[in-house]
Image 1 (tube, rainbow, N blue to C red):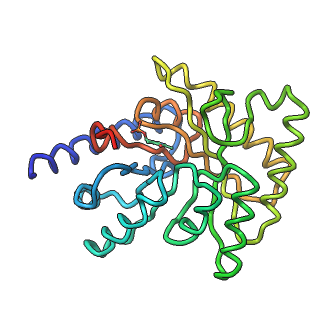
Image 2: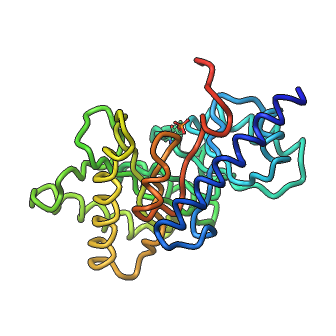
Length: 248
Ligand SMILES: *Cc1c(COP(=O)(O)O)cnc(C)c1O
């Protein structure tokens, strides 16, 4: 038990150092990058160790798995935590993520946006969200298709229309964009995806200047230093902190 805690703390120290080095290379202050510890599959006891090691932001990717864990962790600690939903949310599960989350990274359709907004308006609250976009064209990736958006005018028009529809919903506060890079052999190969996300963000900011576009959620265990060099403000890191995941 004790050595497991030491292992987690040691890995976290390594990740923080890596983040600091990437920020240094990019001429950014380290506090411009939020480390979201992806705790999916890990039980509350392990999350508690991560809290003791200083982490406060946690990411989960399945609303139904996360709900009881968030409650269990709350009963074990008084530390103020920020939970991030980073996985696909089915429209019929929308209600599960309207409460308890600091940020929904994975808003991926107007349909889900409208469903969320309906619940949120009843609750009289608003939710911070990121629009998840698929920059790689891989069919397996969630999110709005934005592959080569600047060369595909019909796709760009559809994407812009959807963004406008989301921005019109009073219950959602758009804060930026999220993407997942494809699995690649070398992290450098993911760089064009991160650059493309930043470029798309800049274009959306120009078209919709009144929305918030500051946040870029990109970078995971295998590629977060590159993502930070390309402007990530949120990195979602699981294995580098918690070690390998068990198959669920
Ligand atoms: C699991 C997951 C991560 C973290 O992946 P690691 O490779 O363990 O760092 C990040 N983002 C999303 C959306 C995930 O599902």
